[in-house]
Length: 158
Image 1 (spheres, rainbow, N blue to C red):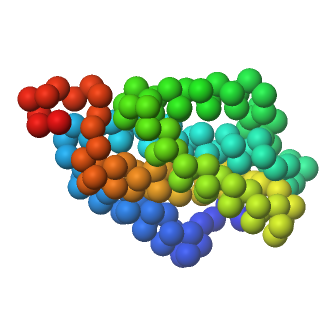
Image 2 (image 1 turned 30 degrees about the horizontal axis):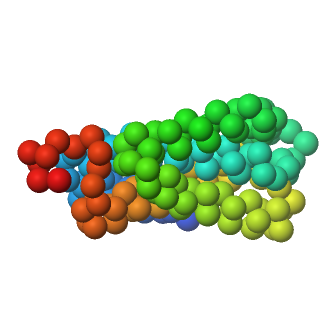
């Protein structure tokens, strides 16, 4: 409940942001905008999954409203939106790029439930950042394999 960020928190945030930045700049230009579109959506999807999966750990807090609104229709809309974006941007196998976000959400949820009995707003934020980082790394791996992207013109050598 301490609103101040400690040195470990700042270090973790800086390292995750540097990881995301370095992954983004390694992407070739056509892949970069697709990755920049997908990875923030995947991070937010990871947050919604985490919020819907486990109870809120405290009786009150800034993340409680998000937790209450995450189930049902918002979860379905978030899932359909991010899966649709993955298909449009990366083809029929594009939703495979969302697996890191789902794995992070599942791992974060299980760990938080075991350690503190549920989630908090800080956990939602951490889930988002790590989901984003792993998704952009998946996009980098996808691009390195040179798997075709349906919307790229043949003139680009695809």
